[in-house]
Length: 166
Image 1 (cartoon, rainbow, N blue to C red):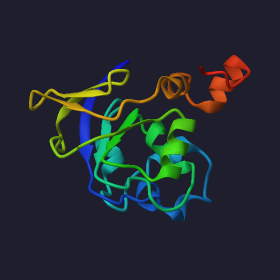
Image 2 (image 1 turned 30 degrees about the vertical axis):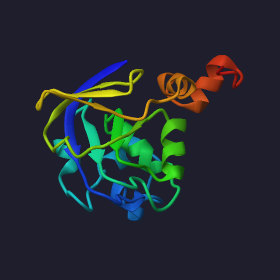
Image 3 (image 1 turned 180 degrees about the vertical axis):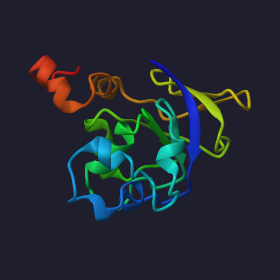
């Protein structure tokens, strides 16, 4: 699986309320509508800048805060297939994988806002096309890749009827 897109870079400690403001969490369950408010407390016009296939790149502790599943879902529904960060809050990581969002941990210092990158999921590698460098990230275990490729844990279980991912 190879993905290519433009980077939207953020810093450390991007919490779930920055990803999707808590003021929207009870207004609708329509993820397409909620995705229009992605990152708006940090960057008000963010949704207008994002194109399908773009990536979010961040620093440490991405997704900290509440355990709302809306946070990884609005990223996915905004057309962003992957987030690359130095580290993720564990509950966000779990929710992201369960909902089919690719989450990669690695050194993001050599990736800047606006860079074009390619993600090689199975290899645990990112090519920064803009800077002509390769960055290795923590390789995603094969069983998680299977879940992601099916669109998340629910879609995986609907298809295979069990959790035999060995």
